[in-house]
Image 1 (cartoon, rainbow, N blue to C red):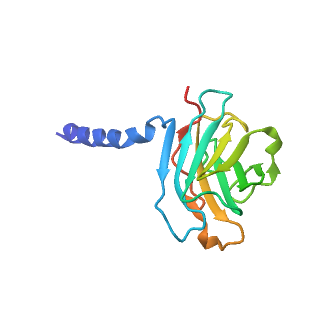
Image 2: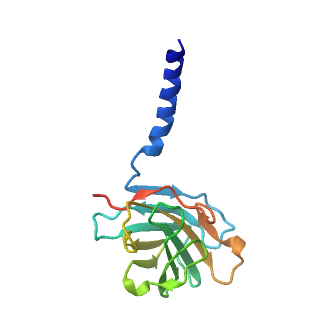
Image 3: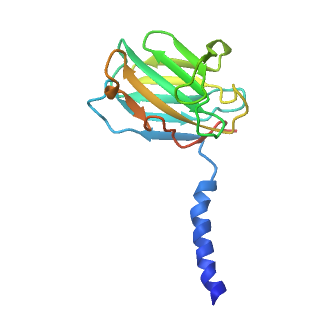
Length: 176
């Protein structure tokens, strides 16, 4: 009797653990509710795995309006499964972007823009960031955090996906 009672419990434990052990997807879209009080509202963020090694993964941020002067986007990327950002990409509309090696949410002092690890383009209602998941070391999966804001506006008007200092679920770094 004792053995039979233990069997269903073991099955429940396995059933609950299975999703955690599942392979991450090659694409993930996070939708964000429309928030009128946000200066540069994020509508959705899509993470896409790189097609193959040596190619770049892509993060597409869709905004609630077209890009305007002083709009800005920050992207933190975790590429090594430690839930701490490794890359920080920042850019302002109609201007340049910069890429930094990150060692946390506010420690990104080493400018690695010249390495070609990442690029950013803001056009229409989209911001597209492409990056090499293995630029800083081998990577099997990645997750991101995005902030959009308008320069010289209060921080309370910033929009984050998923939340400040939180990362999305993981996506495979490479589709094949």
